[in-house]
Structures are given as structure tokens and as C-alpha cells.
Length: 313
Length: 155
Image (cartoon, rainbow over all chains, first blue to last red; front, top):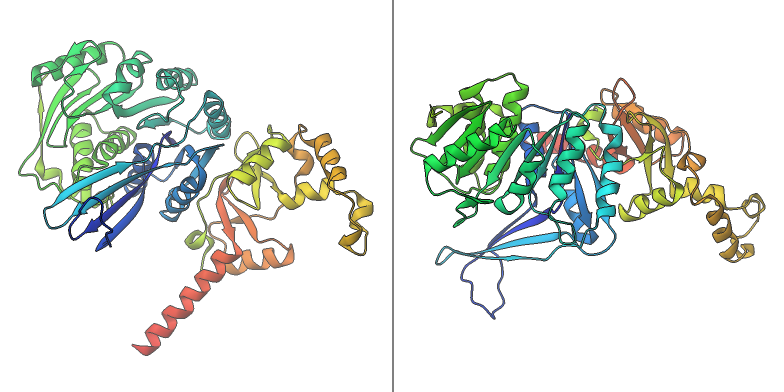
């Protein structure tokens, strides 16, 4: 079983308006709502890849939480969530101005969580642990939780003999990396050129960073930027993975898909460059769509031909 | 139609190490009338609902009253609830019939009617919880089937 945890999920709303003018009322031309969150997307993509023993879990709150859970369940992803007593699950709203193709985004604050919510989550997961082989932590932390939350969770589940995976933006990773997850996936932020104290400006720096993290005991490290260019360290080797003539529609969820691809590849017994190719192909298959979704493993295999893998270390 | 085509993959469950207080919180926060009770291996061992809890805290003599207008004040229920609030949830569990993914919707509906249930846990071959099936889900699937048949006839 793969347990996918999203501690700070959001309802993603995509609204198209003819022309967006601040201060004016707008009627949408098109709209789309989906349950968002890195852990959830990883769970859904794993299911689409054909791996069915998946559990999506995390923290929800208020009416947005109920709506999120309802939408997640409708999509057929097995789930069990813990509700925070107060507040409301986040909404991420993207308003697309069709006349100029400009996107305006608003994100709501989300609930305040506490360590007692984390304890409730651990308790909720207890009856699944005898079958759990992997646990994935994806995305940001809700306010109220200490910065070392992922570090503590990874340590806890490592101690239970479960392979841990973290997929998050850089602010969470240096501390989480100290707990030695099995897989670390960086979701890069524009302008960020460091990993903790380590400066990362070039491909060489990324290769060095991947090696450094693997030397500490992390088995697989993915440092990726917008799917096009990826540095992936796998069991001591490092691969530079590029897309040939890519046609990318949206990179939302691509890193979560890459995470699903890595886990699926390892579970399927792939090795080295095969793992890198499968993971990036999964991310690319998602990036060719508006929604972070794929039709099935065939869609991933179809885009293998666009993925170029070079062993660099 | 098979259960696997229509059941809801909601794995919200109460574990047998929880208290009645924790069970009430889960039922309330999830806005659910009831949830399956599972053991440490996620095997279904019962069902806990608002009804199964109120059955325990409502005194027997109240159940025998002809009219609810004779119902005493809420204090007596509060006292009974206070007595069991921190007890193991197993004290308020009820037995539940279960279905498997390969069972038919008719089997599920028959069990629901026979045992006066609106929700049944769906389990795998080892009795592990896989989700739930509701009467509404079955009825909705039947409506979709009728609509589809009418559409085919029209075409």
C-alpha cells in the first residue's frame, strides 16, 4: 500500500472571464473545480498507472473540507481524512483573463492546525500500517504546525520500516532531508537558488547536490524545473533528463506526477535510467493537460520517445 | 450491476482503540450518520452510528414511553453519555452485514432492507474495509440505467 498524505490541501478553482477588471463584477465563460494537493494528485496518478492499493489522507477543515473530500471521493481515490476543529480548507482561485491571457491568482489562508491533529492522523493510519510499504508527504504545511513537522513524520515512519517520500518546495526540504527520506522530490520555486546552505546555480551544482543528498542516505533525489529539465539521482548515479520538443500546457501537478512515476517505477522493478525515464514521462503526460490527470499508463508509454536520459555521474 | 461499479471509496472508519467521545467527533466532523468499526488490521468488526450511541444512552423506560412528549429533560441523556464518553467505542457498536465488490447491487439492497440499513461496508476477501455502499448510490445507479435504456430505445 502507498499512503499519500496532504496536510494542506486546497480546492483548485479555474475561472475564465472575457476580460478581468479589478473592482468589477464578472461572469465566468468556463469554470472548473478540482481537489488539489500534492499527496492527493500522487495518489490519483498512481491509481491511473494501475497501482490500486492507494490511500489518500490528510487534514481537512470546515465546509471547504467536506466539498474537497466529496470531490476527491467522486474521483474514485480511496480516502480517509482527519478534520481540524476550526477554520476552512484552502481555496486556490485562478482567474484567467481571456482577452489578454493573463492569470490572476488568489489563495485563501487555510485552517490553523496543531500537533494534536498530527497525532489524530497517525492514529487514523494505524490500522493501515501493517500493509503500508510507502508513505508520501506532499505540499505545504498548514499554519500552526512547526517547521520540523515533516522531519518528525519522516523519522517516525522510517522507524516503522515504511519507505518515506517527500515532495515539497525548497523551504521544507533541507530539514526534511535530515530525517533521510527514501525519495526526495524538490518542487522548485522561481528565483530559489539554494538548498539550505548549499548554493545551486548550474547543472553542475544540481548534480553535486543530488550526489550530496544521496551520500547522506536518500536513495532517490529529483531536482526538477518545469518538467523540461530534470536532474535525478537514483541509487548513487545521477541522470540528466530532458524533454525533446515538449508541448506543455500546464505544469500544475507535474511534480506530484513525477513522484508517482518514481514510486511506480520502483514498485514495478525498474532500474536506473528506466526509473528516470518513466518518472519524467509520467510528469510530461500530465503537463500536456489542463488538469493534473492522465488517462492511463499507455499515455505515459506514448511519451517515452520525447524523454532523453543521460547518465552524468 | 456489481457493487464494485457503484460503491464509494470512503475509508473513514473508527478503530477499536478509540473512545465513544472520539467516535462522536468523527461522526460530527465528517457529517456522517455512521461509520464502520475496524480492528488493527482494518477488518470490519461492527458499525457505529448516532443511533447505536443513542440506543445505549437512552434509558430503557424512555424507549417504552408511548409519546415522546413524556421524554425527560436532556440532563438524563447527558448523564448517561458522560458515563460512557471515555469508554471503548466497542460498547456502542452494532453488528453489520457486509458485501464484497463482486456482489450484485441486488444482494446489497436485499441486505439493507432485511437489516434496516442505509449503508453497508464493502470488504475484500479478508474482510478488510474497501469503502461503503449506500441506498442512495444504488438508487442513483438504477436511475442512470433506466435513462440509458430509454436513450438506446430512442436511438
